[in-house]
Image (cartoon, rainbow, N blue to C red; front, side, top):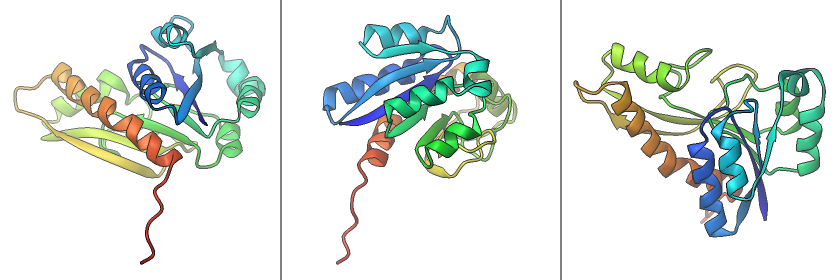
Length: 194
């Protein structure tokens, strides 16, 4: 059974969706959910779904090896950032090469970087009269939203859409595609050589 660990900072609807997806398939499991926010709803969602829910602070992530050691002991096949708002530490990326991914609520490289998350992204897209937006699933590097792109999906934006309308459309793309992309990364289909 493949092992997934999720990092999230907020509500955790994507984390819940991923946990349920793999609980139904029994080919992989989310073993832990980590959050830097003690009041994040994601911790309760994980607890309710019988997944270990752990809170950590800046010191245990950046200054000590506390979080890194828990990850090394847990031996995840994939670390998934699902609405995690802190820059991910180089030492964890180095310990799990090509095993840390993130989802971003826009079509990178547009609307990425520090401060570009959640509603901030959707408001910027509406303000700039963009005709489409989407999601990007990418590998995590030491810079915000700059790792290699794994997958993108698009959604059109109507002239009268506001940030809430864009957010709803983006959430639908996230719920539909994120678990499937995770599964494809964990179980790559061998291409025929014929």
